Length: 100
Image (cartoon, rainbow, N blue to C red; front, side, top):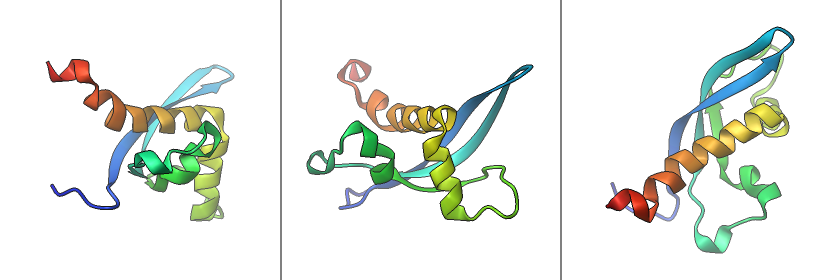
């Protein structure tokens, strides 16, 4: 491990998508960048700044990679799952209470 100017990391994202007959739980991997204090965006711009790439998202063959990322950031289920995965990987693991 070394601190660098850009510290990207990959983590699993767990999504619960509501369906007519219940819900569907599914997972994919996302690559995020860790923001430094000077780069902290408004909440609305957060995923635009931190989401780098995704892997393993089940999509139709004619959907392009940039469309997949846009779709994931636009849907409430996947958007919330992405923010939750980022917070779980970066913020919660580094809270002061977890150090004692």
